[in-house]
Amino acid sequence: MKLFDSRSHYEVLEISADAHPEEVERAYRIATATYGEESLATYSLLDEEDVRVARECVELAYEVLSDPVARQRYDAERGLDLDDGEQRVAAEVPLVDELLVSLEDEAPAPSPRPREPVLPALEGFADVDEEAGGVYDGPRLRRARLLRGVEIDQIADVTKVNPTYLRFIEDERYDDLPAAVYVRGFVTAYARCLGLEPAGVSLSYVERMEQHRGEGEARKGWGR
Amino acid sequence: MVRIADAARARRLARAILSDVLLYNPEAVRLGIQRDDLFDRLQDQLQEARAYFEERVEPELLQKENFIDRAVVDVLVWGSRRVHSRIW
Image (tube, rainbow over the protein chains, first blue to last red):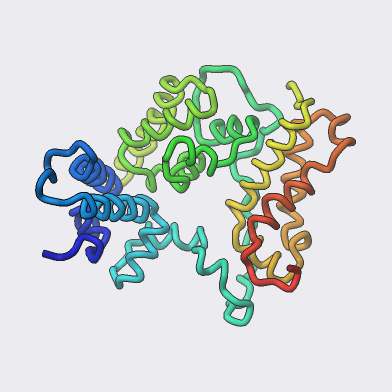
């Protein structure tokens, strides 16, 4: 039997390399339950040290595989093929190694392109509606966050939701977000963290997201 | 619209805005630190950040402290402290 700490992250969570984010979440919950302190599943099978190593491996695997950027880098290191979506995420968010690259190794500056808004979705900042109710979309959530002086990483620290997903929520990158049930949980935690009304905010956001996804499916249908 | 009149809250707002500048422009920030041209390279972004900030804060408070410049140092410069650069 392969030692736990020599397994790949996919093997640790017992999922395939093309597992969707919701499968990663599900596998993580199962694994944490399996190797939990009060778990009967491993009682007498693994000693205390084995369980500790297993838990650490599960946490590390989840940390990497639940973060689209970290997962893409991990896959690349292992020589796994990437789909377009993963490559797109990687292109937009530089990796830590890239931040440390020396000046000599640097590629030439990218060619000029039309500049996107520096702080997307902040237009209308002065007219922000702080009253409860209404539609909660990504830009509104972001405005609410900024007005409270809260950074994405701070919300991630409190909610334990991956900061990449929090950014996707604000940017309304619906196609990069996992299934609605998870997004509902993420938005609920986000809203609670900001002192917004969690149920109303998550309901409003997920409705918009599902509407968008429905339209996307309909468009695909036209193309068939 | 009610503007922010509390300095602590204004500082938090400035940090949050600059944190988003870093989040959306990590490569420009890295190069700005590496080549010591942060303020030139991020001129547009910082102008926009300052404009957003000033829309939300009482003008009297803006006269008392340079919130955005301080947040630039705290968030962008400190956040890039591991980038190789001659400025360190």
